[in-house]
Length: 186
Length: 358
Image (cartoon, rainbow over all chains, first blue to last red; front, side):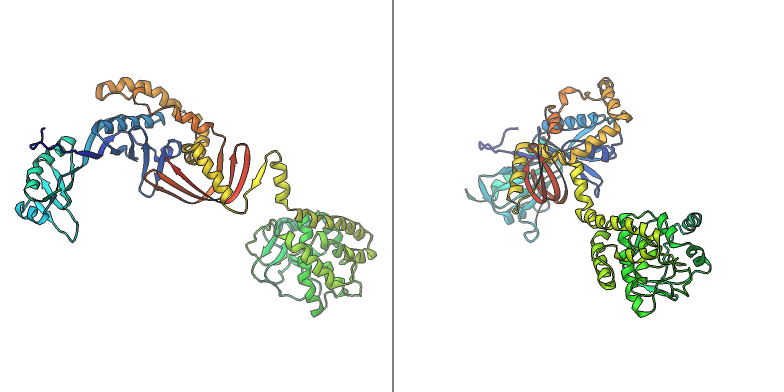
């Protein structure tokens, strides 16, 4: 979607979290001993496997559920997840790459202006909440997109949502609201 | 006697027996830390004071044997010889307290620590005398009626042995440097003399052997061919080595620490065929997956070159760890008590610190 203003905002995706299932029981001890680039955390019952190529870290549970974090795009997340499943397959497990789903996307964006948070919160009363004693950012939840935007007074915002598209939409939606409450142009 | 000896051995398989000096009346208190020897030849060091009491009927059986037989039966091992002085040493102080030997009265029930007999000018009864020669090599100490959980003494003796020996000798004062007590006794008995000789021969060897250190010999034998270097005074060389190694091998080293077991495990598990099954399965899996999701095939492979390299390395560190720390992709290793094989040389360290980026 095109931004409303002529200003092109750079939305930088910093983290994509995805899950998938292997539909088979995984022996964590075998993975820990034979796998490459693994960290065994027996107290949590999981094994962390890190991949370099798409730089991702995966938490592997013995149930076969795997959470893949650290990717910078949805495609990267899927590619990394497949490579991970391939690694497990090579270790000897009957792995099936099923139920891949991106569950969270975290992006940051920087406004060219500072924001008056109290004014912003007042004008968006139920949707926005601001507790300066707890957290320096105002939280704006877009129910329709299931996205959360954290607005900082410096003009930087972080957006988390279930997918990249919702994040982009959220930024679009919130920009005019922020623009109204800007403090001073940067 | 030999027969009796065997019986004796059988009965007291797990119980250490201590023979009290003749004339000593039960119960006797043995102080802590006394090394005793069982009939089966095992050495026990009791870390608590022990009270020795007389067993109902056991004593007579043991003691009827002339010491010489017992002595012969006990092949003087280095350990046994070591035992003797320490025990004797313990007994010796008691000698002045009460008559160690009451030769006439002594009931053969007490196979005695020959050493005790020595200070006394009066010759102990012949059957008992031979015990002296036994002392260096063999002691029949029966802790009658007492059971305790023995702990085998491995090499604790060597250190105590020479000390005890010298103490003992100083105490008796009658004996010449080595095996003198034996000689004194030997006068009375020919066979004792033979034993004494054996003890004599054995004794000088023991300290030397012991002090040489079993471990030293062992190291020498096993590790002859490997050049081993101990860490220098500072940690600099170690860190330098570790640092170089870290940089050179980079991933390989920190991976290798985990992988070294993996290889062994893999070798062991080869029979299971899990990996074999996996490889065959992958081709099948590729077909299966077509229905559900895209099959995992070689297009998804993580780069293969890394893996063979990881295991080809000859640079290995075998050690214990104090702490392994990671922040994002920065790793820090605080290692201890290890051996590094680096560029064909072995380096031994008590502490090593390493940093690596993954």
